Length: 297
Image (cartoon, rainbow, N blue to C red):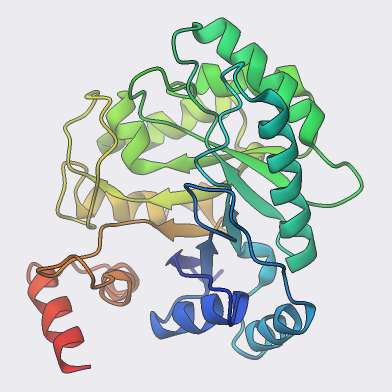
Protein backbone atom coordinates (compact mmCIF):
# COMPACT_ATOMS: atom_id res chain seq x y z
CA UNK A 1 0.00 0.00 0.00
CA UNK A 2 1.33 3.42 -0.98
CA UNK A 3 2.39 5.79 1.78
CA UNK A 4 -0.29 8.45 2.39
CA UNK A 5 1.66 11.61 3.16
CA UNK A 6 0.85 15.32 3.01
CA UNK A 7 0.87 18.51 5.03
CA UNK A 8 -1.09 21.47 6.20
CA UNK A 9 -2.01 23.67 3.20
CA UNK A 10 -3.87 26.93 2.56
CA UNK A 11 -7.53 27.53 1.77
CA UNK A 12 -8.57 30.96 0.48
CA UNK A 13 -11.75 32.76 -0.46
CA UNK A 14 -10.99 32.97 -4.19
CA UNK A 15 -10.05 29.36 -4.99
CA UNK A 16 -11.07 27.63 -1.75
CA UNK A 17 -10.24 23.90 -1.84
CA UNK A 18 -8.81 24.21 -5.36
CA UNK A 19 -6.02 26.26 -3.80
CA UNK A 20 -5.48 23.51 -1.22
CA UNK A 21 -5.17 20.79 -3.85
CA UNK A 22 -2.75 22.84 -5.98
CA UNK A 23 -0.52 23.49 -2.97
CA UNK A 24 -0.52 19.82 -1.94
CA UNK A 25 0.46 18.79 -5.46
CA UNK A 26 3.33 21.30 -5.43
CA UNK A 27 4.74 19.38 -2.45
CA UNK A 28 4.31 16.04 -4.29
CA UNK A 29 1.84 15.01 -1.59
CA UNK A 30 -1.09 12.61 -1.97
CA UNK A 31 -3.17 14.04 0.86
CA UNK A 32 -3.47 17.31 2.78
CA UNK A 33 -5.07 19.10 5.71
CA UNK A 34 -6.59 22.58 5.83
CA UNK A 35 -8.76 24.97 7.82
CA UNK A 36 -11.90 26.25 6.10
CA UNK A 37 -11.21 29.66 7.66
CA UNK A 38 -8.80 31.30 10.08
CA UNK A 39 -8.27 29.05 13.13
CA UNK A 40 -8.37 32.02 15.52
CA UNK A 41 -11.72 33.58 14.53
CA UNK A 42 -15.23 32.88 13.27
CA UNK A 43 -14.84 34.52 9.86
CA UNK A 44 -15.85 32.04 7.18
CA UNK A 45 -16.41 32.46 3.43
CA UNK A 46 -19.47 30.87 1.88
CA UNK A 47 -18.45 27.60 0.27
CA UNK A 48 -18.73 27.46 -3.50
CA UNK A 49 -20.10 24.25 -4.96
CA UNK A 50 -18.43 24.71 -8.36
CA UNK A 51 -15.01 25.18 -6.72
CA UNK A 52 -15.59 22.10 -4.56
CA UNK A 53 -16.41 20.06 -7.67
CA UNK A 54 -13.33 21.42 -9.46
CA UNK A 55 -11.14 20.44 -6.50
CA UNK A 56 -12.63 16.94 -6.39
CA UNK A 57 -12.05 16.48 -10.12
CA UNK A 58 -8.44 17.59 -9.73
CA UNK A 59 -7.95 15.15 -6.86
CA UNK A 60 -9.36 12.27 -8.90
CA UNK A 61 -7.05 13.12 -11.81
CA UNK A 62 -4.00 13.28 -9.53
CA UNK A 63 -4.85 10.19 -7.45
CA UNK A 64 -5.59 11.97 -4.19
CA UNK A 65 -8.25 10.00 -2.34
CA UNK A 66 -10.65 12.49 -0.76
CA UNK A 67 -11.22 9.99 2.07
CA UNK A 68 -7.65 10.68 3.20
CA UNK A 69 -8.05 14.47 3.24
CA UNK A 70 -8.43 16.23 6.60
CA UNK A 71 -9.99 19.44 7.87
CA UNK A 72 -8.77 20.93 11.16
CA UNK A 73 -11.36 22.61 13.37
CA UNK A 74 -10.43 26.11 14.62
CA UNK A 75 -8.67 26.58 17.94
CA UNK A 76 -11.36 28.94 19.21
CA UNK A 77 -13.63 25.98 19.86
CA UNK A 78 -12.96 24.96 23.47
CA UNK A 79 -15.36 22.17 24.43
CA UNK A 80 -13.65 21.59 27.81
CA UNK A 81 -14.72 24.88 29.38
CA UNK A 82 -18.24 25.91 30.45
CA UNK A 83 -17.81 29.35 28.91
CA UNK A 84 -19.53 29.88 25.53
CA UNK A 85 -20.98 26.37 25.42
CA UNK A 86 -23.67 27.29 22.90
CA UNK A 87 -21.06 28.91 20.69
CA UNK A 88 -18.83 25.82 20.88
CA UNK A 89 -21.71 23.53 19.94
CA UNK A 90 -23.03 25.69 17.11
CA UNK A 91 -19.65 26.54 15.62
CA UNK A 92 -18.55 22.90 15.72
CA UNK A 93 -21.83 21.94 14.03
CA UNK A 94 -21.07 24.51 11.35
CA UNK A 95 -17.57 23.10 10.81
CA UNK A 96 -19.01 19.58 10.52
CA UNK A 97 -21.52 20.82 7.94
CA UNK A 98 -18.78 22.57 5.97
CA UNK A 99 -16.69 19.40 5.94
CA UNK A 100 -19.71 17.43 4.74
CA UNK A 101 -20.39 19.99 1.98
CA UNK A 102 -16.79 19.61 0.74
CA UNK A 103 -16.92 15.81 0.93
CA UNK A 104 -14.29 15.56 3.69
CA UNK A 105 -14.95 12.93 6.37
CA UNK A 106 -12.13 13.67 8.85
CA UNK A 107 -12.37 16.73 11.13
CA UNK A 108 -9.54 17.08 13.67
CA UNK A 109 -10.48 18.77 16.94
CA UNK A 110 -8.44 19.79 19.98
CA UNK A 111 -10.31 18.55 23.06
CA UNK A 112 -9.69 21.92 24.71
CA UNK A 113 -8.56 23.28 28.08
CA UNK A 114 -10.56 23.12 31.30
CA UNK A 115 -9.10 26.47 32.47
CA UNK A 116 -9.18 25.68 36.17
CA UNK A 117 -12.32 23.54 36.24
CA UNK A 118 -10.32 20.32 36.64
CA UNK A 119 -9.88 17.33 34.33
CA UNK A 120 -13.08 15.55 35.36
CA UNK A 121 -15.30 18.58 34.73
CA UNK A 122 -13.41 19.36 31.53
CA UNK A 123 -14.03 15.88 30.17
CA UNK A 124 -17.69 16.10 31.19
CA UNK A 125 -18.00 19.36 29.25
CA UNK A 126 -16.31 17.90 26.15
CA UNK A 127 -18.68 14.93 26.16
CA UNK A 128 -21.74 17.21 26.39
CA UNK A 129 -20.54 19.46 23.56
CA UNK A 130 -19.69 16.55 21.27
CA UNK A 131 -23.01 14.82 21.91
CA UNK A 132 -24.84 18.02 21.03
CA UNK A 133 -22.73 18.83 17.97
CA UNK A 134 -22.45 15.48 16.18
CA UNK A 135 -24.59 15.23 13.08
CA UNK A 136 -25.48 11.57 12.68
CA UNK A 137 -26.91 11.78 9.17
CA UNK A 138 -23.55 12.57 7.55
CA UNK A 139 -20.23 10.74 7.45
CA UNK A 140 -17.93 13.28 9.12
CA UNK A 141 -15.81 11.83 11.95
CA UNK A 142 -14.47 14.07 14.72
CA UNK A 143 -10.86 13.08 15.33
CA UNK A 144 -9.81 14.05 18.85
CA UNK A 145 -6.18 15.15 18.82
CA UNK A 146 -3.74 13.86 21.42
CA UNK A 147 -2.31 16.88 23.25
CA UNK A 148 1.02 17.81 24.88
CA UNK A 149 -0.57 18.71 28.23
CA UNK A 150 0.32 22.40 28.13
CA UNK A 151 -1.51 24.34 30.84
CA UNK A 152 -4.90 22.76 31.48
CA UNK A 153 -5.20 20.89 28.18
CA UNK A 154 -7.33 17.76 28.11
CA UNK A 155 -6.10 14.81 26.06
CA UNK A 156 -2.55 14.54 27.37
CA UNK A 157 -3.00 10.82 28.03
CA UNK A 158 -4.64 8.01 26.10
CA UNK A 159 -6.81 7.43 29.17
CA UNK A 160 -8.29 10.94 28.94
CA UNK A 161 -9.08 10.47 25.24
CA UNK A 162 -10.66 7.10 26.03
CA UNK A 163 -12.91 8.64 28.70
CA UNK A 164 -14.23 11.11 26.11
CA UNK A 165 -14.80 8.39 23.52
CA UNK A 166 -16.67 6.22 26.03
CA UNK A 167 -18.72 9.16 27.26
CA UNK A 168 -19.85 10.25 23.80
CA UNK A 169 -20.39 6.65 22.64
CA UNK A 170 -20.76 7.48 18.97
CA UNK A 171 -19.14 5.91 15.90
CA UNK A 172 -18.17 9.37 14.64
CA UNK A 173 -15.56 9.90 17.40
CA UNK A 174 -12.06 8.94 16.26
CA UNK A 175 -8.49 9.96 17.18
CA UNK A 176 -5.66 11.99 15.64
CA UNK A 177 -2.25 11.00 17.04
CA UNK A 178 0.31 13.85 17.05
CA UNK A 179 3.95 12.76 17.42
CA UNK A 180 5.19 16.07 18.89
CA UNK A 181 2.29 16.18 21.34
CA UNK A 182 2.69 12.64 22.64
CA UNK A 183 6.46 13.13 22.99
CA UNK A 184 5.87 16.28 25.01
CA UNK A 185 3.17 14.46 27.00
CA UNK A 186 5.65 11.77 28.06
CA UNK A 187 5.33 8.93 25.52
CA UNK A 188 8.68 7.61 24.28
CA UNK A 189 8.67 7.42 20.48
CA UNK A 190 12.05 5.67 20.55
CA UNK A 191 9.94 2.71 21.69
CA UNK A 192 6.97 3.28 19.39
CA UNK A 193 5.87 -0.37 19.39
CA UNK A 194 5.22 -0.06 23.12
CA UNK A 195 3.40 3.28 22.63
CA UNK A 196 1.21 1.78 19.92
CA UNK A 197 0.47 -1.30 22.01
CA UNK A 198 -0.60 1.00 24.86
CA UNK A 199 -2.80 3.02 22.49
CA UNK A 200 -4.38 -0.18 21.20
CA UNK A 201 -5.01 -1.56 24.68
CA UNK A 202 -6.59 1.66 25.97
CA UNK A 203 -8.32 3.18 22.92
CA UNK A 204 -8.06 0.66 20.09
CA UNK A 205 -6.25 1.06 16.77
CA UNK A 206 -9.59 0.94 14.99
CA UNK A 207 -10.19 4.45 16.36
CA UNK A 208 -6.99 5.92 14.90
CA UNK A 209 -7.89 7.95 11.82
CA UNK A 210 -5.10 10.54 11.31
CA UNK A 211 -1.44 10.89 12.35
CA UNK A 212 0.23 14.31 12.63
CA UNK A 213 3.94 13.91 11.94
CA UNK A 214 6.01 16.54 13.75
CA UNK A 215 9.38 16.57 15.44
CA UNK A 216 9.60 18.39 18.79
CA UNK A 217 11.75 21.27 20.03
CA UNK A 218 11.35 19.78 23.51
CA UNK A 219 12.59 16.77 25.37
CA UNK A 220 10.09 14.11 26.34
CA UNK A 221 7.53 14.93 29.06
CA UNK A 222 8.03 18.73 29.00
CA UNK A 223 4.37 19.53 28.16
CA UNK A 224 5.27 22.47 25.91
CA UNK A 225 3.99 21.69 22.37
CA UNK A 226 6.56 23.28 20.05
CA UNK A 227 6.84 21.61 16.66
CA UNK A 228 10.18 21.17 14.90
CA UNK A 229 11.18 20.20 11.37
CA UNK A 230 11.53 16.50 10.66
CA UNK A 231 14.79 15.16 12.10
CA UNK A 232 15.79 18.44 13.72
CA UNK A 233 14.18 17.88 17.11
CA UNK A 234 14.31 15.57 20.09
CA UNK A 235 12.24 12.79 18.50
CA UNK A 236 14.66 12.40 15.60
CA UNK A 237 14.42 11.32 11.97
CA UNK A 238 14.85 7.57 12.48
CA UNK A 239 12.15 7.40 15.14
CA UNK A 240 9.72 9.39 12.97
CA UNK A 241 10.41 7.15 9.97
CA UNK A 242 9.53 4.13 12.11
CA UNK A 243 6.23 5.80 13.02
CA UNK A 244 5.43 6.79 9.44
CA UNK A 245 6.15 3.36 7.99
CA UNK A 246 4.83 1.28 10.87
CA UNK A 247 2.96 -1.77 9.61
CA UNK A 248 -0.01 -1.11 11.90
CA UNK A 249 -0.45 2.45 10.56
CA UNK A 250 -0.71 1.52 6.88
CA UNK A 251 -3.60 3.24 5.18
CA UNK A 252 -3.76 6.07 7.74
CA UNK A 253 -2.98 9.56 6.37
CA UNK A 254 0.18 11.17 7.77
CA UNK A 255 0.10 14.99 7.94
CA UNK A 256 3.07 17.33 8.48
CA UNK A 257 2.60 20.51 10.53
CA UNK A 258 6.26 21.50 10.80
CA UNK A 259 7.53 25.11 10.98
CA UNK A 260 8.10 27.35 7.99
CA UNK A 261 11.76 28.30 7.55
CA UNK A 262 13.90 31.11 6.11
CA UNK A 263 14.89 34.45 7.55
CA UNK A 264 11.27 35.61 7.75
CA UNK A 265 9.82 32.11 8.37
CA UNK A 266 7.86 32.24 5.10
CA UNK A 267 9.14 29.12 3.31
CA UNK A 268 7.12 25.90 3.66
CA UNK A 269 9.37 22.87 4.26
CA UNK A 270 6.93 20.25 3.01
CA UNK A 271 8.29 19.52 -0.48
CA UNK A 272 11.68 18.71 1.03
CA UNK A 273 10.39 16.90 4.13
CA UNK A 274 8.10 14.68 2.04
CA UNK A 275 11.07 13.91 -0.21
CA UNK A 276 13.14 12.94 2.85
CA UNK A 277 10.34 10.74 4.12
CA UNK A 278 9.77 8.98 0.80
CA UNK A 279 13.50 8.32 0.42
CA UNK A 280 13.93 7.48 4.13
CA UNK A 281 17.08 9.60 4.06
CA UNK A 282 17.76 12.53 6.40
CA UNK A 283 18.82 15.81 4.76
CA UNK A 284 21.22 17.57 7.13
CA UNK A 285 21.15 20.62 4.84
CA UNK A 286 17.35 20.86 4.79
CA UNK A 287 16.96 24.48 5.94
CA UNK A 288 19.52 25.83 3.45
CA UNK A 289 18.07 23.76 0.61
CA UNK A 290 14.58 25.13 1.32
CA UNK A 291 15.84 28.72 1.38
CA UNK A 292 17.83 28.29 -1.84
CA UNK A 293 14.85 26.74 -3.60
CA UNK A 294 12.37 29.48 -2.71
CA UNK A 295 14.87 32.27 -3.35
CA UNK A 296 15.15 30.99 -6.94
CA UNK A 297 11.37 30.75 -7.43
